Length: 523
Image (cartoon, rainbow, N blue to C red; front, side):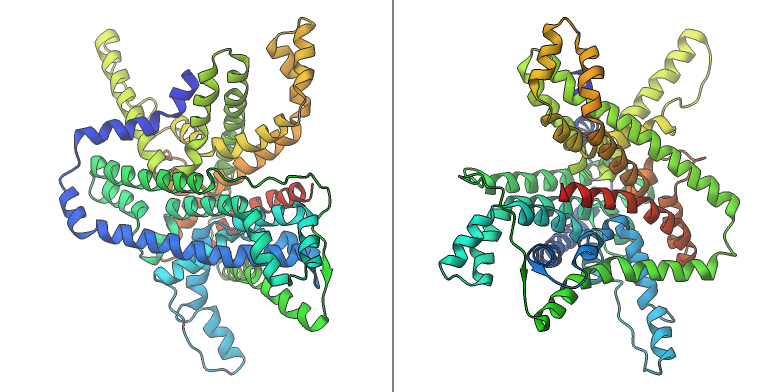
């Protein structure tokens, strides 16, 4: 129960602070800005849902159902856009389409008349976020397409139903829970985005939270905006759960027949290949080439002493975050199991809601209680020992790791839980019948069998920590920097080319989990 309270402190803090009232600028925000925040966030969510569905579902069906050229490379290349944080993709597209950008130079080199596409608006932001986040839908849809019962497809064909109608009437309805699950992750990431929205000048709830906290210096106003954003998140989760209520998507007869892959005419294979390749090109290849081009232009201007110091700090923070988060995920999984109190099993699930909460909201919810604790420690030290001390906890790496752990606990918990469910309960029961305690049983039996899940959890948390921006901007210590923050600072100072090298380092750390994720799907 103590762990549950420890992890849910940010949400409780925001709810408590709501009763203390907003800041002085709240009425101004309600009158002039809140409608913009709401409409922009709504259109971002709606646009990203439509485009990620289009990119994710179509590409997943093509590589799962048809034999097309380069199908095997495409299967894992379609996950690669996840390796590039959306704010970095936003920087790359802004530079590519800008005046004197790569597109203009490319057109001039081939003798064509240059033209410019303005992406620095909400439509450009919708495209950038969608092309970065569609793999969430692709991964979910492909996993279902590959391993749903092939008998339903065969039965449909025997009844004379055409391919497209079979897809609409049978495949999509069966796959709906998985696809919607992927869309939920997309919406969470869209609401969490700060770097891309700020750079493109689009006002959202997250940019409003930052503006209230840093520009207006009104934490109470930022808390009110955080509460609205939190309500939006939970309403969306409730809608997703409600639309599945009372519906059964399981097969009545278990079948190991995989989705049959068919060969079509060559004149149809090429268009299908290009349909599946378009998201890869715009989501990964084009941004990567833009970053590499910028790196060649600016590598002489980089202070490599500072760069390597920042890279080492980023790696160290991400490694510590992964270790701490995996450790707490194990506690959340096993403590309720070892305890006889039934309500603990349900309450422990609350702890993995952090990934559904935007990073800026978690940061505010963590900073306020830790600041109050620091003030209490300063007061007690002065009164009891006559020693004046500064802030002990706030502004340190401890607070940052605490916030990261809350944010990414679900990322670690899910693969560990999946591995745990494959372990027969009889093994642990046999060990305890032989007189072994819970801890010895865990280390001798469960831990060796959980290694693949633990490794997956560690890598996924490590990569997410390397990419995280809003939370890091608010809570990072003054003497510590990360690659994500450095890239953001370069872009904010109109030195977007210099942001290429730290951005490429972040992308490089994301390639390994992409390969791991593809192997997990195939298994």
